[in-house]
Length: 240
Length: 240
DNA sequence: ATAATCTAGTTGTCTATACCACTTAAAAAA
DNA sequence: TTTTTTAAGTGGTATAGACAACTAGATTAT
Image 1 (cartoon, each protein chain N blue to C red):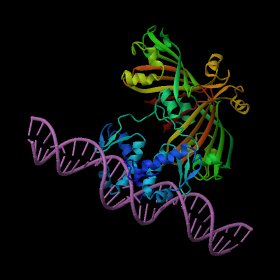
Image 2 (cartoon, chains in turn orange, purple, red, brown):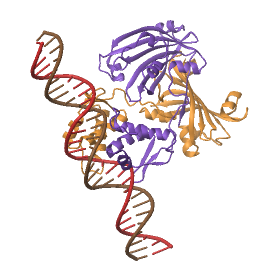
Image 3 (tube, each protein chain N blue to C red):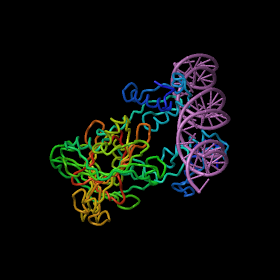
């Protein structure tokens, strides 16, 4: 298991070893793992080296330590609160899901007063309207409508929006997204939303409106999303 | 700076020390901090102890390490949501409303496995269960159930909970609340909740579960809230 | 002047050990 | 039999030291 002659650090090998055992179900959620001293004795390594491996797994959410009792497999799968602004795709990947998108509509419309103000463009100016079903593991997770200024992102094409717009903005256009404001509210699914999301009409949904901004303060996009409540919870950590 | 006789661990003191320097601007983004050996020599502590402090700051995103070069203040701004973590009362006041509370229940119960784990107490240990209707401008806004460990806050009394528990914890007990994780999900009101909140059964509600922690990392409370969706939206700013 | 090598400094990994603080089971006392 | 004390086991903190791997500047060789 642990090869002391491998170029890989010993703590890393142990970390991967334990992680595999958890992922393969050899160690179940809530189950106590061997003590630090046992690992150290079994593999004839220092306890401090064991601690480093376990520290990392604790930080990553795989394990939970209880002083005096032992170390346990975390009962909640690595559902870590988001510590920063993420794209939908990044969010899904963080949850261990495969993100996807199905484009419903993509066209250019004139900005109404509300959107013009939010995107800081002239009323009536051209803006993209992008409607997509956001998928997670090939199943509908959210219905999303995004608005972006045409003058900010000229020549946006269909192939650019089949996946992550954040990815496109940051990696292809070299723009830096700095922050976003988000408003979350609870609602119930209307007929059209229910059909798209494959849930019952009247089922609870989480509405999220997001306004994101570039690092020069310029608005990037306005996004209105309807998430299925049965498959999505918004998780966040906030400092006092 | 570092008090070896303090009950606070040395690594923790150093960690807070460095973090303060960053937050006060004494250490700028991109700037190199003193080396591990320098800290160790300055404070006459072991280098491994220094490493533990710096490990934590690296994990929290304050610092970045470059092998062979040194350790640098992270350039990415630390997430500081505009609002930060607020108590219910602070939230309402920020919205221009007058906060209030009506206590429904206040008693001591044994901690079940889930709450015991979240509050880091022994299963079956005494914890307070506090159920309140939270008011805004004298109208029901949320139904809230809070759990606090009796060993952490001995002798909590009814008059302490008629308003803000955060206020009591911080100003009367002198404890410092550091951060909280929050999970938000959409749901619909069940019969009991609907009656308490004066809304229709089946009306949308926003469920918020909050786990807050003191600055020594110890859990303070677990709070489960049901907010009326028609009167409450959750608003937040997040940095990329 | 340029390239190669050396040196000093950094973080990264690992060892061995000691003691503290907590938990729980076992043993001793009532 | 019940209660109290002790012992064994857990993670938590800290020390001192050694060597590896990398970085960048200084020195030496071409």
